[in-house]
Length: 499
Ligand SMILES: Cc1cc2nc3c(=O)[nH]c(=O)nc-3n(C[C@H](O)[C@H](O)[C@H](O)COP(=O)(O)OP(=O)(O)OC[C@H]3O[C@@H](n4cnc5c(N)ncnc54)[C@H](O)[C@@H]3O)c2cc1C
Image (cartoon, rainbow, N blue to C red; front, side):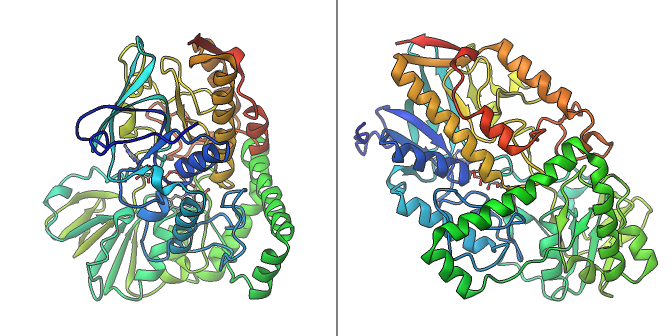
């Protein structure tokens, strides 16, 4: 297939350009999809990116201490292994560079439309194509692949009075590096995966740190370490040695799925290890009690840190656990009536996961948006296709998230599925595919049936659950099962509309 010829006018200011495939996003999902399309000799695609650089999560999250918490040798593309990772858990800047290098190396940059947020995508049933409006203009596409990321829309807490706060307030995913925290009274709301990475970095710098923690997380030792130069040299000289390391990490991590999905009791011994880690690092019994989790390990994401507990044990840190009543111009009032005076509030309060804005912008066959279709909670078929939305493929859609291993593994599984769908369409002369509602329903019934008995339904509140309390976020099984089941596009589960 040939590269689309795009006139300057068609770049957005006038005529409507047509391409075979539009991909949204340049994180691991969008870039991975674009690279695999290119490798298959498919050039007729455009990637829409609302920002001015690639990288997604790893471009946006620049808070101090940001790093992956799945080892880099696994948290990377299988087809683009990087022998030069500097650490077991590489820092944000290095992962961002890796993604940039991938985009350059595989020739994806010319396909990307920068500052081109998708505003609306509307399926035209007569033409059997997508009409897409972006920040830079219009285009049409046969196929739309949405890789906008499940953790790309920062969520700010709805606390009474927060809009009256007169100090500085920002989300951890939108870190304000121009703002100097030195000597300030800083409040951090939330103690999830981001907060436990940046709290140890800001604690020595700030004057006073108030950590507002609703639920103490389970924390395990991180055991991060530098990758020795001789190992990097070995990986460069003999790439199979790195694949071996990757395979070993993968296998070890799948034990996490065994525990969380099938044998939650296995986690009891891990809970003991975590409590030992806490006891070793927090001698003060009062603080230790505050930091002791009261739900089953694994119900929320298990966090890794060697420096969070020592940081919150310092005299300039106060851990408040009673919840927030209101925010005033210069303070936060907690439920126990205490007033905490603060200059800056940092919200480490996560993302819009089950209510992502793009769902309101994609409208399918009957003009209904994904948000409408998902009124009772997000649902898809293998997290990829949705009844009523022909030729739409989601990357890391509902029920493809993981609590134990690399999301890149799931992303690559889904990419193979989409590629096979496109091949099937070409081979069979099909213009559009749409998953049957019955197939989608049966799949989701299976997923929800399998959720029962997992650690995620053991009674904690978490971002894995939608407004109805269903876990529409995670895949309830081994990742190799997901890969096996998505290896081929199962055309039998779809309506195929001929050209
Ligand atoms: C701080 C942090 C640490 C993490 N660590 C790990 C880890 O260690 N291991 C792991 O497996 N996972 C981790 N994750 C999850 C991580 O999000 C995924 O692993 C992965 O990076 C998701 O890639 P993605 O391409 O799907 O989404 P993203 O990386 O979020 O990329 C989405 C892209 O789409 C663009 N976009 C969104 N909406 C639009 C629109 N309307 N129009 C145009 N462009 C749009 C965004 O600008 C962005 O570039 C982490 C997440 C966070 C936030």
